[in-house]
Image (cartoon, rainbow, N blue to C red; front, side, top):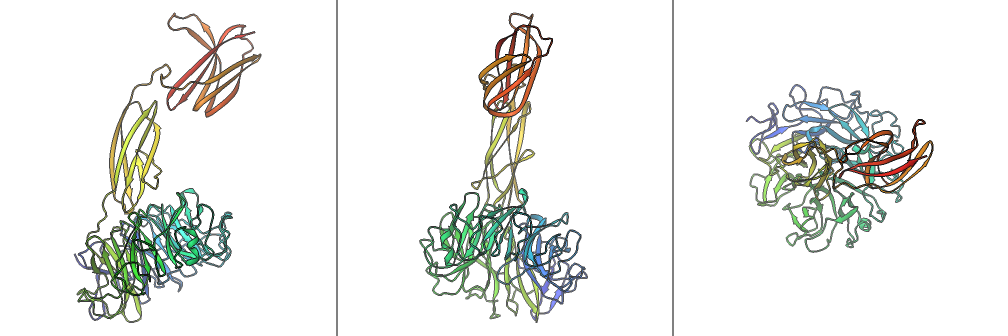
Length: 612
């Protein structure tokens, strides 16, 4: 397959059409103008969508053909088609009037599956109405509809005075965004007056959670930052100074550390430590795997015996086993990046042997495959040599099949590049399902897990809520007859797996269910023109109270005619209702019948009364 773009050994650029896939080692330039020529302004990046098809880069060049206004804009390139779009725009397509944040040490933007949603930070004031704080805010852009929303807002929905630090990170489905606040509080519970980690849930209208806070409400007295959210949105890694040790009871080493918070469980754990204990140096710049079980980070501590210096190295911590390993053979220069399935880690730095083609005496981007401990240099020329200039800004796709680096093949002009790493290790999720029929109600439950995180479980036409353990459960009314329900789980890189469960519900009977619960504590008091009926519902159920007059019928099936009735919505506990007795109702013997419909079926009870 032809290469998308090649870096010649001498450093000049030779360009070819961009393609989606290639042989291992193939590279492609991301900094191409609409006509295919290389950009003359620096292009930097990158951040992949979890599936690797889309990639985010920044530049002041008009890569999409739309003028940038001379400020750094954010672009989304489709690697399959070669098309590119400016995404740091208002809903009407107006480019941001201030630069998008893009620091060298760690990415400050991200994309969801299939590039549907992107997040970024900027001081721009023209992206949403009412943004007048003149400071940095965090935004989420829907690339399908063009809609853009302000994420970093206070409880009134307004941008925060003084702005925020930014550093947004987005979950694979685009519903959750983690970011770093400023000194100002976004929630009343934020009382420490320094930057904190927040998470916005866009499915809950942007509801905010203060992540960097213990279950007891303890907050760090000094700023924390650099959040990295897992693909499933269940875990968030971040870093903090030694003062942030108050967030984790077991953190007493007196160094800057990397933490992992699970907002739903309200727990915070230290990730930057040796396999058997604490650390002896500072750690920062985390990158978390799709299910939150693996964390890559930079650390100057000697967390393994082979690390004999205080230079920053790339480490990976397995939170499940407690094992820590060093993945960089020498010092690194910026944040490492881990694939969603936790199988590969990209980092930028110098290497110490093992690669005869790395003769540039400058930093390069490497990828470590944890299984087998293979090391591959992603920053390369057409012949496989290392570029003459230093390569930085390591990034890797969720499936671990492509990596990115930024370098300057032409002196003074940075460009972002993509390298094909060969097939990734990410597979389909594991999903189980069982069904239980209780009257009319069918419950389908099970567990869905994947190293890349499980972002959705669909039961028939319904989406289930997924616990941190992967457990899910959905209850709905089963149709009459045999029903085959398909359960589909989607992981953090877009792969799916499905299973089915069958259940049979017999045709509904006209009588009450023998398993159904019945009303309790029934009392009836008649004071014309009202009959006051009091009863208790032992479970949540819809109810109906009927006043009936006995009529002639068979001995096995006594007959009644309905005189009046009153119904109510599902409820539980004590209920009191009144039935108006029609004026022409004659005195005599009548029946008050109460029917309740719950998940266990139809339950009834009756009382005979006398109307005066």
